[in-house]
Image (cartoon, rainbow, N blue to C red; front, side, top):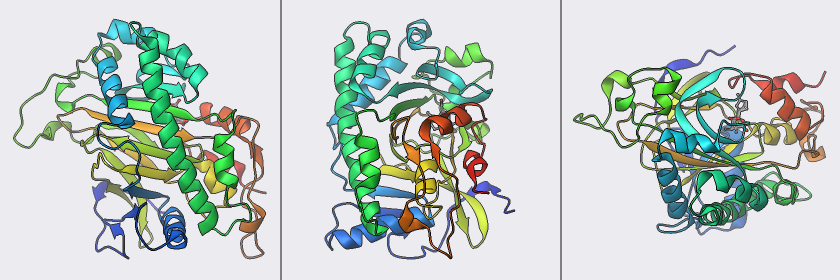
Length: 357
Ligand code: GA4
């Protein structure tokens, strides 16, 4: 077994074009043709399970992303009592520190929403009591745009992997019953964290700052904002402000190392989820990642988790199974997988429970 080193590193030197510090970058508008783009996306997802998408055309400055960030910031600035009207997370709704149902905790507060208009409208009443439709419009506009990008990436993957039905993956997430989620995470400035008890955390004000010379609180380094895990769904698209914190576990010359992902508010960070690993028979890898919240400024991130409908059958595609690459996972439904994931801790390597006999 490979033991991950705990100290985050930047991998160097870059291994091939478009890879910097171990993190592949894909220019979604690069000239050079769709075939080349498809191959680049498939290669990044196979080698790293993760890439930075730039020039993606979604949420340019002042667009849907900026409007969502403003609505989220306004919500998180509310007094704790008001925010708690949208919680506790069931798992959807407002949550503070507690993650899932099995004792996981992080230094964050969040909103977890089902990414469909009816569910958003229902939830918006407890999030923006003054004008619920204002909040739902902003969320729905963002979800529409980010889902389009997710479909584009999934279609490129279908092409890059040489699937017979290149739209197989994207059809799973555009189904009207798709179980996709939107998560908005607010990591309060580490400098304001005094005590770790639940009440204190959840009452923290996000605007309070402690002065340091470089904006990073040295004594707060290493706090787990969101613990190590892989995303269970098909594909996740993350956008965040200019505050660092995200780290991915990458393999470098046979060793697993935590790699810091420099913040880039103009980019989407894309990662392969467990279901895509299963559908591709392990060809694409569901990357483990975490957030270390050590900055003196709040980190705000928004993640779209593209998921299939609950009844979708997840089984490796025939093109992915060969004599040299036999079936790795037994077929299962997304509903079955979700039940398993909610019964386990955040860091569990849950896909291993589905290994073919
Ligand atoms: C990790 C990815 C997403 O944030 C999430 C998380 C979910 C939750 O917060 O309710 C889970 C976690 C995530 C996987 C294991 C279970 C479920 C918390 C947890 C301990 C929304 C998701 O889909 O799975």
